[in-house]
Length: 293
Image (cartoon, rainbow, N blue to C red):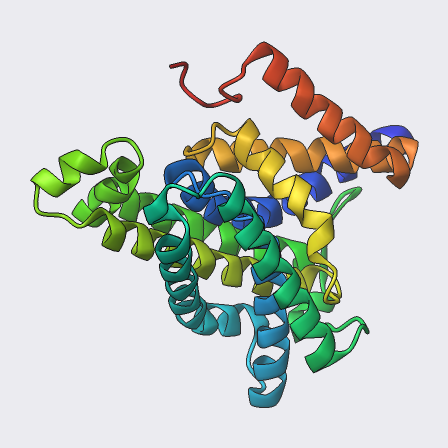
């Protein structure tokens, strides 16, 4: 096979697998940012914090990191509910959620980063399951399980979240709460309670993404800086509140970023990927998969 074609095919496959990780991170943000209109800038920091929790507990208990991520997700969901309770009490109920609420999440982000540095130091940490060293080869295409299995687990979790949002009363209430909270009150549903639960689900998904992250690459307390722009870009490109759009945008973003890194060098990768985001928004302000108002 022509070397350029082989590089292209491997770049596409690796980009799709990388997109699975982006989808896991951005799907939780699609709930908080897209459905609740809460700009949780601390979402990637919570993902990294979950990654450290998976490394600590998974290493101590000898459990698979992806299984450990599923086990710690409820604890992070409770943490998210607590964060939303503070956010609502001090900002949202007073109508200060725009600028001051954003500053609140910046504060949460830096508290998490400093706390991780104090607890674990600035060094990189990782947790390798046995299967992470296996690579399947299909002709000239390499498929490392280190990236394949986290991507599949992430997509399966997103599928379950989509079913929950589409097929349950609480899920439909989450989708409706940012659009018409008064209508929910008329149905004897407390919008604050629904938003608290939804924000908890969002942070719980950050924990799942954190477990996938520690398999794909080593992490350090500042690793979330790399993901802030990417997860927001994927969320916006996918149409904000659309989970299916979020997945498709994440896969496309991963492919564009990876192909750029493969053919032109890693330094060009963020510029091309975010340039593509700006082009998409110039043509479709509602995102690739969002609906026009």
